[in-house]
Image (cartoon, rainbow, N blue to C red; front, side, top):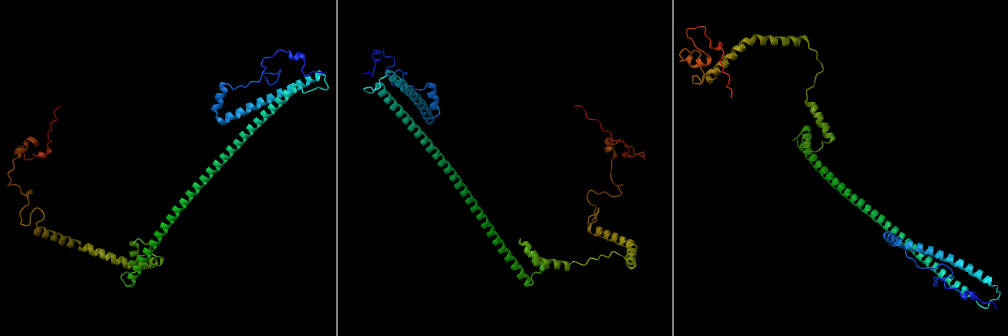
Length: 326
């Protein structure tokens, strides 16, 4: 009867890493990322760290599954080499292979579930982001609607104030016009006075009253003749009037001068006052009796020689000394 485990396999030396799940394969150890990789992962945030961890676990699971497949082929080749068509029991390697395959399956299943959880979380985050974005858009629309409503309210208030002002202005204008019409009916004002009164009150004159006032003003103005022709009779009349004025001019001038002299004599105009006395500061035309000493001004106007009948002090130039240098 063929033995499941050859004798040479029992005496085979123990290989390094006997704690390996797959005999004869490479030792499987849990490895951590390097310091730089871990620092970069933490710098990018927990989500990026989780994503990279899942990616690394998937790569290790695929590598582990590949090793399990290789070990299954090696074990099957070893069993075939024994040549025992009817073995008494299951080869221990097959049992180990089953455990290893189950471990690989559960490992892949765990990683798949972890990846599904990560994807679900990402979808939830995307959904939350969409909801937040929708909320922001809704808040913006509500703010815009409130702003438009406030603007519409302000415009409505402004229109209301304008309408009230127009109503008040129209009522005041109606009162002013009614008062003006009553004054015209009592014959206190005519059409021109009515229009002037209304304008003084700061109200526009109605068209019919303005037309009546314009017509009344037209009737007050004298007609303007467009004919510029002058006949001989008018020329003769104007010539006779001018000749009369020229003939009476000397008599008129003499009478005018007499009137002026009378006024001067009676009112004391000119050099004399009303009492006939000469005003202060005025000299008589005859200055023979005045005591005038020409030598008093000789130093300024030059020497005076009384024997020189032709002497005229105004003919000499006045000597002006130049100013002294400082």
